[in-house]
Structures are given as structure tokens and as C-alpha cells.
Image (cartoon, rainbow, N blue to C red; front, side, top):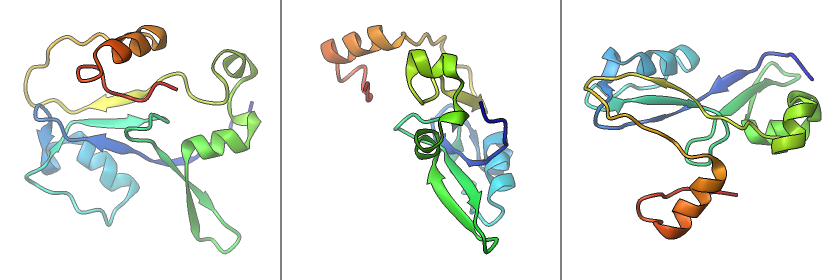
Length: 137
């Protein structure tokens, strides 16, 4: 397994319950990775997503020979280099990340959420696609 560090550019979600504008730690994290990013002080910055979920995949910044950046999908990097996922994880899940890491910036109380495993998620999506949207491949 490879142990290098990579700079991530993460996606975020703008749910109503999230903190707004510069008061959100999500906005601050986004700015730390992209100092020129414009933060909208009227927008909710609720969840920072780190992973390969198709609804908001992360990108990786790679240095090139000319010291410029090349941006690629995190999943593209995982597909290209088998050393980036441990053998044990790859045997069960393939060369992907079997989790979605989130950081939340909460402004109001949230309901308790429970997420199904992949098999149950596929069943629920098939039975109730309007209540359980998503991509289950």
C-alpha cells in the first residue's frame, strides 16, 4: 500500500440546517484548499464530503514536471494505482473507498440519521427511488 499524501479538493453540500457563509467551518476548509474561492455569505455550507461518492466526488491535485497542477478525480487515481488501496480492502470492495468521510457544520438541530449498507440501499432505491435516490453500482 502506498503511503503518500495527496491534496484533496472536496465537494460540499448546502443543506438548510448548515451554517451560513464564513461562519461555517466547511467554508473555512474550502478556502484553505482554494484561497481564491468565493464564499457566498448567503449560502449554507453544511457538509464537506471526502471520498468517491458520485454525488460529490473529491479531486486530487497532482504536481507536474513544470510545477503546475493537474486535477483528477480521486477515483481515477485509485483506479490507476493499485498501491493506493490496501490488498484487503481491494479484495472486498475493489479499488475504491468503502466509506464517505464527512465533516458537518451544523446551525440547527438535526434528526438522527441511519444509513443502510449497500445491499439494503440498493433494495430501498429499487422499491422507493423517490425517497432513496442515489447511484448504487
